[in-house]
Amino acid sequence: MATKTHKVETHAFSVLGDALESAAETFEEATVNAKDSAKKAASTARRAFGKGVHKTAYGLSYGVIYASIFLTELWPEENPWRRGLVEGAQDAIEERSKVHKQTAEKPKVAAKTKVAAKTKKPKASKAVKARAAKFDAAVEATA
Image 1: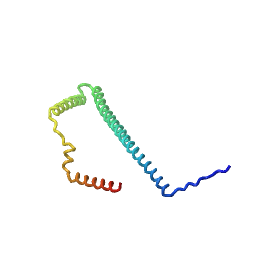
Image 2: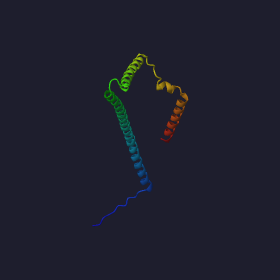
Image 3: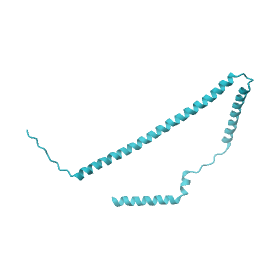
Image 4: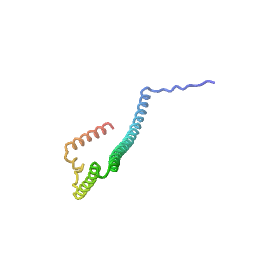
């Protein structure tokens, strides 16, 4: 049995062109996947950091308050340290109530919007629009 081999003529530049086209498509897909992956990773990291901050604050607050209450109950009622802790806690609660009532009574002032801040810089807007027009003209010229 004789085997025949077919000689396929390929041009070096066409092979190079096909390889570059394939590489470009692969990089484009990788870029899209990388953006999605980066967004997911950032979201996950933000959530994990937030949970860590919350647990740290909770643990600190719980430890301080629990220790204060435990020590308060440990000492006799006539002890000046115990009286100081109890009175300090009561005053802090009352002061917080006063501040909370005052902020609830004040009318809220409308904050400046981002739109108002953007309208103050017309030169930057004009420069961006001019560059965009140049880019669009260059794209149309190459097409």
